[in-house]
Structure formats: C-alpha cells, structure tokens
Image (tube, rainbow over all chains, first blue to last red; front, side, top):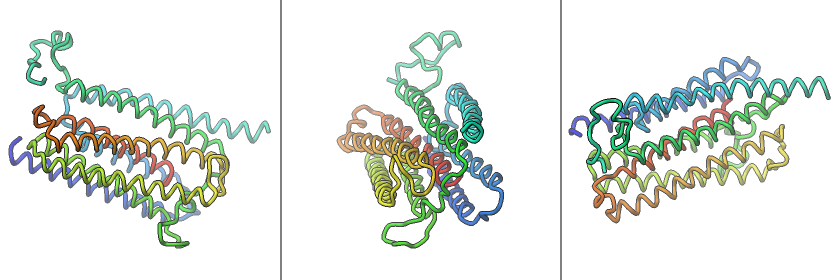
Amino acid sequence: MSAEAHGNMVKLIWRTFWIMLVLTIVEVVAAIFYPHDMNRSPLNVFFIVMSMIKAFYIVGTFMHLKFEVKHLIITILVPLILLLYTICIFLAEGTSWLNMKSHIW
Amino acid sequence: MEATLTAPTTTKNSWNGGVSPFKVSWGKLMMWYFLLGDSFSFASFLVTYGALRFSYDSWPIPNQVFKTFPFMGEANLPLMFVSLMTFILIMSSVTMVLAVHYGNAEKNKKKVAMWLFFTIIGGVSFLSCQAWEWTHLIGEGMVMTSNPFGATAFGWLFFCITGFHGFHVFTGVVFNCIVLSNVTSGVYDRKGTYEMVEKVGLYWHFVDLVWVFVFMAFYLL
C-alpha cells in the first residue's frame, strides 16, 4: 500500500467514526426531546433509517466489505433478504396475538 | 498460503478448487459466513422482541427505564448512560480497525499491539458498564420473572438479548487478548501476515454492528 493510500485509509476510518458519532447523538437527542403526545411512527422510521446508515458504514468501511470482490458482497448480503421476510411475518404474528388476547380472553 | 493461489484462467476453473474466486483467504471467508449465521441468531432474538412487543397493549417507555447514571443518584438522565456505552463500543471499533490497518499495510507490530490494547480496554469498559446497568436494574426489581416498569417480557428479553450480546463482547475481548499476545510475541511476523488481526477484527465490528440494532430496539423505538 502506498503512503498516500495509507493516509487516505486512516482518514476514511476517522471520518467514519465522526459520522457514526454524530448520527448516534442525533438519535439520542431525538429520542429525548420528541414530544410524548405526538405520533411516534415518523420517529421510529427515522431511527430505523439512521441504524441502517450506521450499519452501512460499519459493514462497508470498518469490515471492509465495500472493497471486496463484488461476488463476495452479493453472497453476504443476499441471504439477509430472508430477515425482511422474518420481520414481516413475526410482527404480523404479534399483532394477531394481541387480537386473540383481546377477543378470546 | 496466499502465494500458492494462482490467478484463475477461466470462471469454470476458478470454482474447481486451488484458487480463491472471492480473492480472500479461506479463514476470512469462513469468518464472514459465521457472522452471517450469527446475524440470524441475533435477528431471531430481536424479531422475538418485536413480535412480543406487538402482542402487548402497553410497553415500558425506555426513557423512563434507562434514566440513571453511576454516581449521579436519582438525577433524571434518560439514555445518557447507554449513549456512553454506545460511544465506547464505536470507539473500540475504530481502534480495532486501526489495528487491522497497521497490521495489513505496515506490519507495524508496535502500532498493532497499541491499538489492540485500546480495543481491549474499550471492550472491558463496555462490559463493566453493562454489569453496572444490570445490577442497577435488578436492584430496581427488573428480573427474568417480573418487571416494575410494565410488561414482564420487556425484562427477560432485555436480559437475554443484552446478555447474548455481552457474551459476544466477552468472547471478542478474549480473542483480542489471544491475538495481542501473539502480536507481541511475534507470531504474525514469523507467519509474514497479520491476517488473524483482521479476522478477529471482523468479529469485533460485528459485535458493534449488532449493538446498533440492540440499541435501536431497546432504547430508541
């Protein structure tokens, strides 16, 4: 690795750190100061998007996946689609349990 | 090891063994596959949390459960302590990636050892914070079978999920200690590669990655 590429990598690492730190601080501030009587859905969407961005930086830069061969990236990321499916069916399941509790018992 | 891998001539040959189609070593690829599997264990935990949460009418409000800070008595400081824990873990991820970088780019034994040492300090600090938080919550009456803040499920899910994560952090600290002792005794200089630091680094970043989602599910949503 050349001296320049070396310096760039260290810079990239620290830049990623600052991005992550700022995102986390913004999240915590939002969690504390969001009015209690307001609809929480937009806030929750915001938290999920922020977490996905942080995950992107951790996996891409810290775990170096961005710089790997394209097919390795695909192999790692594609199975995770199953998780989306799992989230959908289990949250629907939870809602159904709540319905059963209030209607049957 | 790497030197014996020749460039693939055709796509067919590259999948027949003897070469690395993904241009990574066997160990690193298997670490990725292990982490992929592990992400499913954590996802199962968090999805269980989601399903149970959706099945309750009311759920404890994180700002009211997590509002104490060591040595601050009864002061109301919502989410401050967990923010500190998150900061420690992100910081330790940075020190880890620096250790990996100085190992791969410079084979700089001193710098790798120094950054690995900081990573271990970060990991131990995180675990200490978690121990304090658990002790405090148990003291307030939140245990596996009852929860003064609301739904019982919140309590046992909290202990199972942060416990499973904490166990991963603990394992990571142990791995880091082993690798640090190998670095200082020159094992990787003799091998000619610091790749083991990178493999353990992958595991460590994964632990940080999982914390992003545990933090989101328990403290933010």
